[in-house]
Length: 200
Image (tube, rainbow, N blue to C red; front, side, top):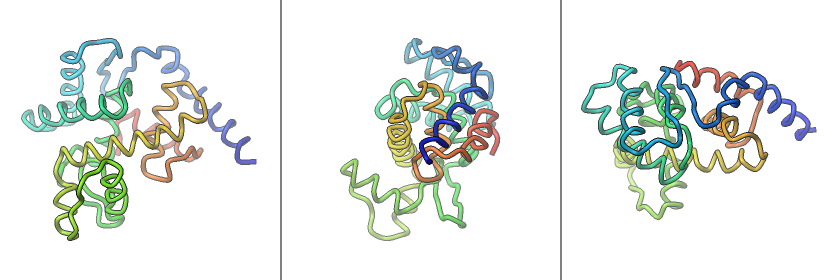
């Protein structure tokens, strides 16, 4: 039964990431940047910026991206570990704002597809451009892309959260499910490991 597979897969992931789950208030990200959930906004922003810089991102770009990530993560997924979010964007696009995957196709930092972007724009009450060229240009804008990506991550997390798994595990599975249907699948284990290691 699907439910039995779900429980079994979740238990396996729980064992794999038990060290992380033992310390829910503090998570050491792929670059060993500690981001305690109780720290102030300025320290959190600094930690996010430090992690982005560790990916060889230009300092000026890192300043902008860290502010946007903090802004929209606090709006859509407060309490979600910023280290995971930064690693997620690195895996998706290596923090290149002009990334275009012609195979999907998907665009920008969070590799958003046009049909998904249209649904998100409607949900957020944002007027989405009509022409394909304008839509692509819209998604290549860092703020638009981060905003849409983190909103979509919020929806992924809401689906996973219904399973009532531990919070850190729920967050990791939400990121892992980002590229597929926002439901739990055991194949997301590989994706979670890539995220945690900061690998594409």
